[in-house]
Length: 84
Image (tube, rainbow, N blue to C red; front, side):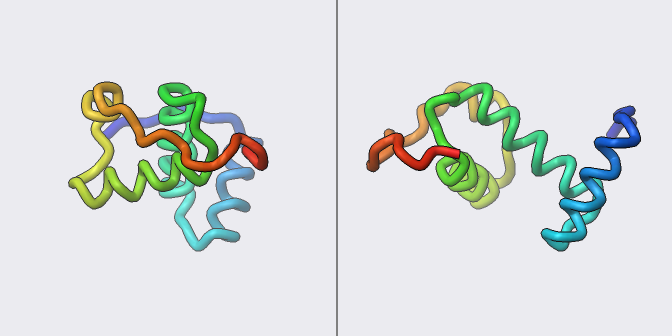
């Protein structure tokens, strides 16, 4: 575990989002980091598909970047309309 320095504004954003979603500030920050990491690794996926990857990773024991990089996600079934 380490310390990550963030701006006061980002800390406030984390606090607000965490409160709204019933997460601690640290849990909210980790969620946003996981979503961001997977979005960079799989730009073709939308938010819903990224969340599905996170759930699959959790069921498999947690998100491991080595596995996430080597695993090809399932192809989206619908059109790209409505992407977030």
